[in-house]
Length: 285
Ligand SMILES: C[S@@+](CC[C@H](N)C(=O)[O-])C[C@H]1O[C@@H](n2cnc3c(N)ncnc32)[C@H](O)[C@@H]1O
Image 1 (cartoon, rainbow, N blue to C red):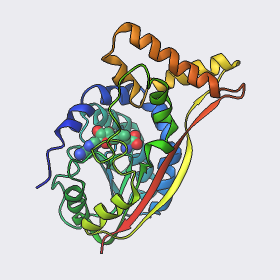
Image 2 (image 1 turned 90 degrees about the horizontal axis):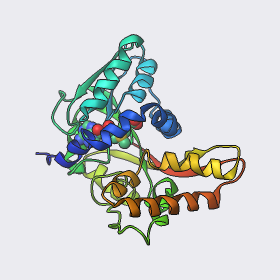
Image 3 (image 1 turned 90 degrees about the vertical axis):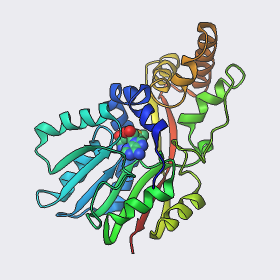
């Protein structure tokens, strides 16, 4: 029996999902390199059946569908109604072998041995009970079937997330980042990922590091570069939510502190704030 995942279902149907919907195209651009690294590791072949876990607005499902071709099939599954709605809208003109399901990916949705490949770009770190979820998912793989996904490494290696948090350390009280709880860093500890996947019955588990800039400030002057990056900080990550609960005065001070931190690393060529991921691969026996 899997846990309920209710908090994440609420978040991804609430303000977090709304932000991902608003900045959908920008997020697809910013996460493309990480997704591409997992896609390359997945070695998708024509004719295969693929499940895209936590597919969001569908960008990776479309890439997978192009790779499997007309003889294959891709199902994107996600708990977020607005994001699945966007994925379905985007799919319509494309004529690809892809369909989308609004559902919790950890639920028993598919018959055993349905898929050749389970894939995800940042969609697997949100299960209340990851071992139960991955056990259920593994059963849907054919014998020898593959798992390939991208997830974030530890917060300290992800400036896109921690740089703005560090900048407002003395202004806004922050709970420590809980890497054991569902959230972006829940799969950041490689030993924990090994344990979860091996308890879920996977074999040949490998994690390879992959890094790329996450957001990039651009502009004609250092101030303009910092301002561009500042706007991106509010699109994704913890800052919008953290500051929403604060007074106007605190919000202004915090915003000024983040702007100053960004200005400190801005050059006239721009700013690139990095992200570090694991590309995780494994097989079903
Ligand atoms: C960080 S977003 C990534 C979305 C997409 N893969 C992409 O790269 O654009 C995480 C996604 O996982 C979805 N998600 C969270 N928990 C889920 C669950 N239990 N089952 C299915 N999807 C889930 C969220 O709704 C969200 O769309």
